[in-house]
Image (cartoon, rainbow, N blue to C red; front, side):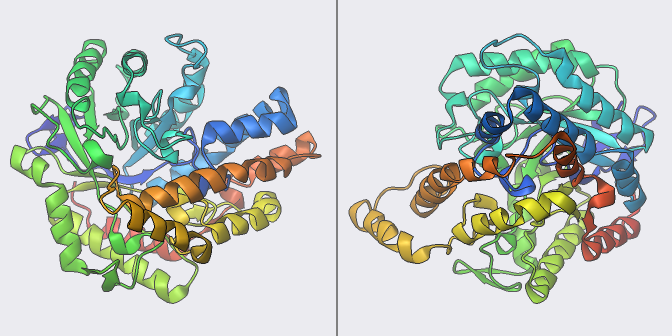
Length: 459
C-alpha cells in the first residue's frame, strides 16, 4: 500500500515511488470530444436510448466499456514504462438519481476488471470521481447539461457524494494496486466557501472507511486554487492541473503569443511553480493530475505541441513531480491512440460538423462561426462591461452558453439518429472500433513518452 512520507510517495517497505502515467478519460466517464458525441454524457445516452431502445443501447454501451480498455492496453502502457493510470468515473455507474443512496454493486465490475489488469502489469490506479451528483463544476466533463455547479448549492448532493465515497473506500480498502482516491475532479465552487468544510467532512468519512489509502485532493477552480485548504491532511497529495495556454485548441505558436501572453519554456516553469506553490510550501508530494496539449493535424503546429509536452515533462522531472497525461484514448484530439474502423467511418462527418461549429469546448478555437457570434460578444461587452462570471469570464461564458450548450444540445438528435437501423453486429463493431487493435497509434507521442520515461528512470 502506497503512503505519503514527507514530499514523496513510498511503498510499505519505504521505496520511493513517483507516479507517472495517463488518464483513462472517456471510459467510465464519457466526454464529448473523446468519443465524438455532442453535449454531456447523460443527455447523449438518453438520446441514443430513444433511438435504440433500452436493451440495445445497453448492449452498445456495455460493449464499449469492455472494448475501450483490455489487457492489450495495460501491456502497452506498461511497455512505455508507465506505473499509474488515473481512472475517471461517473457517479451514475454506482448510484441512480431516482434512487439516491442505493449503491449499485454491479457498477464495480468494470472498475475491478481494469484495476486488476493494471495491477497485473505493475501499474497503480488512482480512482477519480470525475462527475459528482449535481455536477461539481460548470462544464461537460462533470456531466453538466447547464453552466451551474449545483453540487455546491445543495447539501443533498454533497451527502450522496460522501456516501458513495464511503462505499468505494470500503470496496477497495485492501487493494494494494489502488494508489488512492481522487474524490472530486476539478471542483468549481464559485464562492470558495463550501468546498473547504466539505473536504473536511469527506476526508473524515473516507478515513473511517479506509484509513490507509492515499487521498489525492484537487484545489478549487479546476485544481488551481489551494487557499481553500484549512489544514494539511495526513497521507494526502494535493493535486494541481497544469494545462499550458499555448497547448489549447485556441493556442498560438510555441514559443509565441496566445491571447496576448508570451509562452515559452521559462513561462511553463513559472506557471508550474505558481500552481504547485502550496505543495512545495507544505512539503507534500508534487503530482500533476492533468496536463497535455491538443493536437491539430497540422504537422508544424503539432510539432510545437510535442515540444510543449517535452518541456513540461523535463520540468516535472527536475522538480521530481509525478504526472498523469490527459488522455489515453480518443477519436483524435489528444489520445496516445485514436479509434478507427466503423465508428469513424459512420461518425466522422458528424465529428467534422461539430468541429466546424466549435461545439466541443475542448476542441474549439473560439473562432468557429465568429461572424455569427461577433455581434453577441460585442453586445455583451457594450451592455455589460463589468460582467465577469466565474470561472473564466464573459467571453468564455458566452461561448459556453451558445456553442457548448445550445448548439451542442441541438446536435444531439443528429448524433443519435446515426445509430438508427444498425443491427446488433453493427453496434458491436462500432464499440469495438475503440479496441486497441483497431486504433491508430500516435507514434510521435508514444515515442516521446517512451523516451521521457526511459530517460527519467529514477523512482
